[in-house]
Image 1: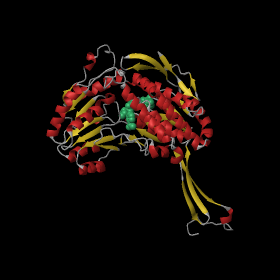
Image 2: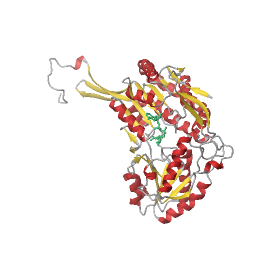
Image 3: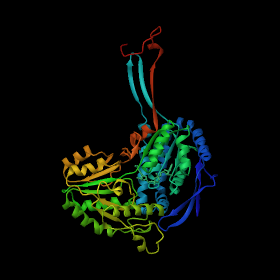
Image 4: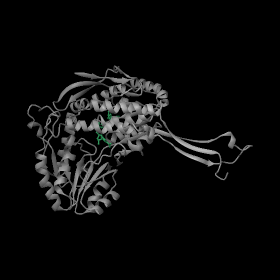
Length: 501
Ligand code: NAD
């Protein structure tokens, strides 16, 4: 059994609260570690350290900051498999998928290497006679990142790389379910040459989150997690005068037009809905075939694929899908499957009793893949996020009806349309009320140089993650108007300056 504590000021710091949370291996169901849960005082101490490190880091030349990012990229490539192994053992996603989790985070570090270019301000020469005007982007100070269990490498890297490259000091409060990767990331940052106190990890729960959202020394909070907590973090942080971006849950629809290549659609759906056991905020969880003929064909093609999913220990190279993250989450997902059944959706494949088929790993948190047909908009199992290995089919009779389902849903994270028709695709892209859209792409996650963020109850706050929006989120603009003595007129002026001079 290992124990994780905190990483503050460039060193491991032992937890003092006396509170510990369990860390499980979801593939076996065994408890493999414990994580310290910080008290308010411990979080405050970390904030003080980050604040102490801020002035020097903000004053470090932008080229030197970029070089730390360059070092980090090299270290992350070297450590990718170690990180992925740790990730897989606590999250339960299969090793190859865990490598992808690290890779997508690493790509934000690659993007952030270009920070000298990204922070270039604007300059206007001679806006009035002898007067120049320029703007620059300044770091905010101490900023916090609060992250979910499902991408323990990617999401901490989204936030920390952008925040730190911009000159801020950073406190990460990772999910208490899989804290090993965040702690390993601290070692990577240190080896990359980051000064002590710039990247800190405070492990904890609500008490830590509340402290970060209310302490006046924290200038911005970046959050990713479930919608109720995202709403809470957004409301609390903004009420305390902070900038906040808070990404929440999802229900992602895939529209299947009759002209689509249905073989491609079936493969795309299976990978997207059941990969990572459905624990992805961009997983397709609802398929919307247009027309009963397409729907019947889809069910016929999906059923054998879902039944044949290779489910196993996350380090089994044959496994396509591992367990769910905790027994509690597995039971919650199971509850939704029961609900869908009670609400009258037709069970095509039932993954609920799959556990009994796991030879040697019966205590792991497994579910089989499930498939429901004839799902209706009023069903609670449709309206709420399930976050498990299940796909719901909602039949639509035409394009307009199909378009209305994702647009009317309270979540608006991702969606996708499969069609060969450019006009239909273009119409869908233009009109659907969702933040990230794929055309014949099942998981349209924007790359590091674009920005990630959903609409409606999938995101609170105006500014997305990474890309140019990440730079905007972690900086504030200062605009300077300058004139030198030679250009000054004599005598006082009492009217507001205008461009007439
Ligand atoms: P979660 O909301 O339970 O936890 C997220 C973070 O909030 C964790 O660090 C946790 O410790 C903290 N937290 C939990 N309960 C809290 C409380 N009562 N008060 C204060 N803080 C609290 O989310 P999760 O289960 O770890 O992650 C899965 C969720 O995240 C899903 O809903 C998924 O859709 C969402 N998600 C969204 C995105 C996105 O970009 N939109 C990306 C990944 C995951």
